[in-house]
Image (tube, rainbow, N blue to C red; front, side):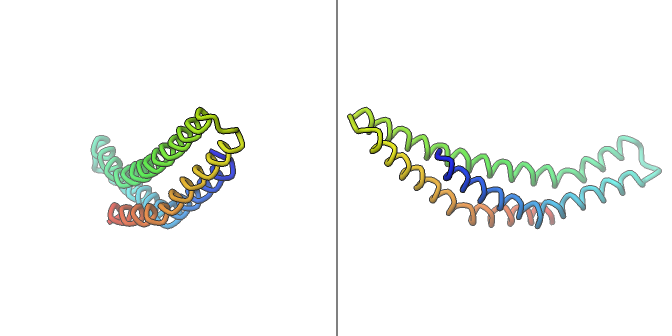
Length: 138
């Protein structure tokens, strides 16, 4: 993918992840650590009970991390498939005898279209992630 296109997508995704981290993940981490500390403050519990309690405290955070990772992987896979389609189109054009400038132009337009399409998906992906993170937090 052309560097400018890649930078654009990376910046948008990074902005989304920072927003999720700031508005949701930090709160979950705070709850997880407070909950874990409370588990350790129970003098009558056995070590097994304390570990089970701590594991329970960590479950929502693990779910949240898995959710974000899964969404980002799906997004990346879709973008990769789109750019691979562009590569195929460019190879077909080149194989049909087109000159390199025409192939480069096609490739740039095609990849630009992929990036535009996927950047436009980020707001709905963000909303979906926020909704899911809020349901995990409850």
